[in-house]
Image (cartoon, rainbow, N blue to C red):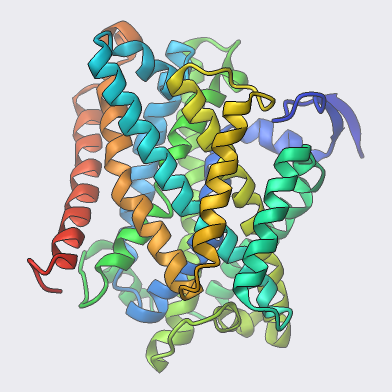
Length: 428
């Protein structure tokens, strides 16, 4: 049964719209579901498929780390939004009084968000194009240009909400199929548990490990979460709101982790023993054949396309909101500066997507770039979470600080090691 209700939308003039039970599920789950939806994109599917095919279960520990890291950092972001009533950008802008410190903070955060989201956008556009390439003989680069134009028009004209629900439904169907396939193929459980809880970096796996972290612990989700929790729990007592937000974060991110586990497991089962390289979406789709047979490629292509378009619109918008909040601009879709940010992100994403680089390699590299930029935003979040004037009694305790520092240390160490490897200082 459909009911007319008032719903919050991204676009002015679209506040009143026809809502289905999906809207009520979103309200029941809270913003944690938005966080999960944001990191379940074509980059996640592609990167985890490459990891499973190339290294079997050996990199599953990065998935466990990523899920825990996401929960730790997103809980902080949600607590910041609920207690202070401000988003992460606004909190950062108001916490540094010295002009030099404020300027340096703004530069570092905007650069990290801009570069990270531009990299993410490359993966989003390329992923959607890979899905279309499965269904036609048109080159991925040509489809990338078309996908970028579609994302641009959806934002410019304000039509994204018209197609959003259908796209999310298709992504959800693909996610369910992955989980069912994981169950049906009966993976090697002892090997899975070893991979999950015995960290290792097989030769040549470092960039993929960083990419797995970067595709799950998404910096712009910290800004998104802090800005949206107040809409959900603004009228709820703080202690109750914090408990509900924490539960929402744990449940939603864990569901996303389950999907990622399913993708990596099905890829490891289908490809690792045979030495198959992931070189196209058609190859990736074969991991669903135990459940879908010859129809696997079609559902996978449509799911990848849907995930790519939804993410290709969300990432530029998130970058624009974060930048506007950091620089004190109006968070208004009609503001020219706001529009310039999301347009720039799309243009950069399209430029890299059509550059001729291998689509699979481009996606994995884009996620890795995001993983290497993660510590910048995480460090600033940790600084804010220890400010008495911002959070009072709800500032970080020693446990939260230790967990946050551990996340930053691991992510930074992997990133530095990768830079040293590229420079030829270390091998591996």
